[in-house]
Image (cartoon, rainbow, N blue to C red):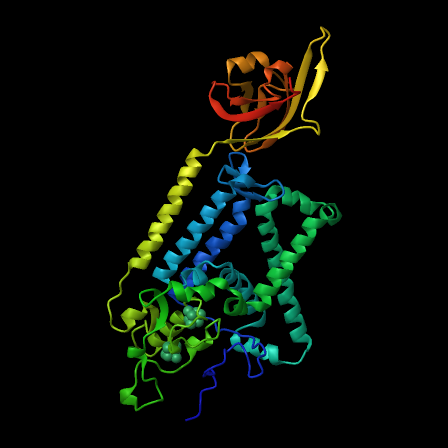
Length: 470
Ligand code: SF4
Ligand code: SF4
């Protein structure tokens, strides 16, 4: 029997030819309940991505990752570089959550929320279809020689791709620079912000290349999550799967009376954005986009059969076994997530809004002064960095803890109490002035307190004072 021209090579991906060159795919359009749901979800995600940098909460952008200032704001809470261990916990929680989700619902992330799928399906693919037409027309155009029609269609398509990429890259930068600030930066000449301008150009080029041309290649050869999914999934994980018991033997391979429900139309293969045949079983290349479900359901309805020959199901259920939704692996993931979130929650609840760093201020550790009455006085200079995460203005008073220290050491600083604005960092300078006999053997440790207006002690820091050996 002659092989169907859509039958895929047994050992080679559909995206490469016999010489190993890239074969550019033109998946067929599908419509159906999953496509409708995904389109709605993609639009919501893109809307969120574009709107979030413009939303402010307690006077700050709701998500702002200010790398030069090393300040990271999430929903009114600001974190600093020294909070890096908390980021590690967030990262761990994310990894365990992805493991948990994948073990239950397979590659739901890839098909429903990965930016690669969302932007290509909802923006770039749409532009392409609008200008170059349906799958067959796009293929014909690619194979056609360069004529006027091909030039204007390709130029218009890549022009619109460029506009989309510029928009995505600017929104992306809005999370790091601040959307409002970035808006005014874009109004000024590029020479005034050359670094940012080059970063923007790089990102735009990257998005244009990846979403416009590289596409499914990223999922097939570059995505680490795609490679790891096989260790996170098992026969009880939900996957997009073909039901061979119902579908086989396919039409045209046996007597008509023995045929299963698959009519061998290859509609599922032609609609697949990674170019695989899901009837060969669950494959690494499947991004669970559901295109083949809608494609096959459409055919099943046309031939008067029940939809669902390709559907969301587990390998166990397809083999007629019972699906165990929660297995030891799921509880291990849940336990790890709970543990990490508990540690994170405890750290956040204990975290002081005020962080203070004391740095000895000059090249010499102390200076000696002779006062008009002839007595000697020693001064130690300290620079104080105050990182304040709170949302409201605060006045912080500097004072020494012990009474004896308060009487013996004078704190000389331009402002005491010192004003702090919500979510900002400030530097203060402080001289500790005292008589040499306050020290014992050239040094003494005192405790500097940081106190708010209500006399609440926000923080205490040890300060080592030094001077001449008595
Ligand atoms: S096999 Fe189906 S779900 Fe998987 S990538 Fe192809 S079309 Fe999407
Ligand atoms: S779309 Fe359905 S009927 Fe057609 S080849 Fe695929 S599984 Fe078979």
